[in-house]
Image (cartoon, rainbow, N blue to C red; front, top):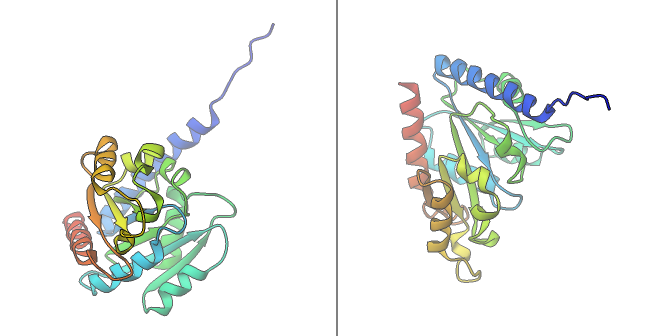
Length: 222
C-alpha cells in the first residue's frame, strides 16, 4: 500500500497566524497603540459592558471599538450612537478574527488618534480563543446567567485571558451561581487572571475595571 503524506492544515494555519500576531504586536508597540480582545458567549452582555466601560474611562485614554459579527451592524451602531468611534467587521461566516483581520479592521477604523482599540469578538467561547488576534490584552466575560462551571467546560479561553469579567451580578439573587466556585474554576485554568465582578446594567464594579484597563494601556505605551 502506498504511503500518503498527511498535512495538518489547521496546525499550519494556526502557526502562520501566531507568527503574524507577533508581528502585529510589534507594530502596535511602535505606534503606542494597545489592543484589547473581548470574548464571551452570546448574551453575556459584551456591548452593554463596553458602553459602561467607555463611560467610566471618560476619555482618560482615547478608545475605538471594532465590532465583529457574522452579519448585521447593530452593535457598531449602538457604540457610534453613544458617541464613540466604531467600525463593524463582517467575518463572512467565520466564527473568529485573526491577526490579519484585526489589522484590516484597524486600518478601516483609523487609529492615529487612539490609545486603545477594543475588539468585541464574535460571540462564542471556542473559535475566538484558538486564533491569536495580535491583542495585547485578552479579556473574557462570564455572566451570572451562564453558570460557574464555564471555565471547566471551555478551558482555552480562560487559560489565555488576562482578566475575567463576571457580569450581571445584579442577577445573583435569581440564579444559582457560586462565586467561590467560579473563582476556583478560573484559578484552576489561570491563576494569574484578574477577576472583576460587575453589573454592566447598574455599573457596579465598572470603575475598577476601567482603572485597570487605563493602567495597562499606559504601561504598554511606556
